[in-house]
Image (cartoon, rainbow, N blue to C red):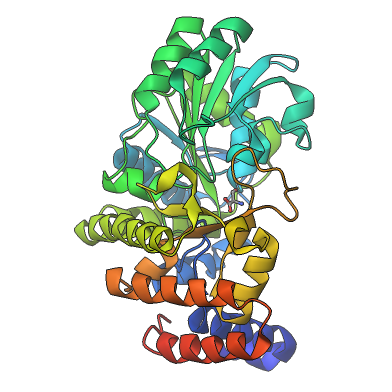
Length: 410
Ligand code: DSN
């Protein structure tokens, strides 16, 4: 970044500081990752200079021969990898991608059914503070109070009573495999569209270590920067019959020009995700998350659903007489980065809930395995037992920084 260094030392220095932060802390936020150098290069390329409103061969600006090829390449890679007949790779991120699917399939005032935000849904699944909660009548579902898992009898009962036009199978804090076939049966019974938001698990689905919604969901949204390990962006996959309405909803319905540098970087990430080593990475993500879960359970933490079979773990820290926010702040002081999160049926507010959410994708990318997860559990437990002792947190922080010297990814 020699030009940036010369032309804008302040921004250059801040980027260098953030790089250092990413390389010296243990990053356990389940929706974050480290992209490859190849993805970074595509994001930082001259493609950012070009406007391309429209789609290949149907653009509103001249000079598109190369951009058309790039977009078509990324689109076909997405269709092949996820085995769905149509992909749109233009959405700026997951929220506009979800909105585009609703715009394509629904009318304002229609009923949608999604998981409540506090049980692990997403703002754009109909939360009252999101525009989706104002535009549609929302029928929420949650998880079983006993098991913390999806309760398909309950979901079916709600769907039969409320007759939603669209059911959303999508989660940001659900640590178990999702049965898209169970959702599809219910959607079929009540005549609803099935929309799958696989943003968190896209990399696991692509690698074949999590069931796929292909052939079951009418529309599928995946952000590209979580387990899929690409640039910040999103893609929509759909059945052929919805291709036109999805494309129209993305542009001109919601967006203007696509971010061509991101489109290319998505293509690069999709190629990486089709390689054999990506499957190994996805398998290791699950092994690492399971090791974190087992270790935390042994240390006496209560986990949502009692464990995990994907990339994330949701731990109730209230047993340590500490809130999720206090835990996340103490962990950061020791160089361990998580996010505080509500647990299902949390009695505390989202700004200071009872839980922390941890994930294994980023640490797996930089080469950590089960032994390292055990060490991380030890540090987490020590931090939470000593969250008021600044000197202890600093001491653990030094151990973490020394440990991270072995994982200089960039
Ligand atoms: N904000 C994302 C997450 O961290 O789960 C969801 O979009």
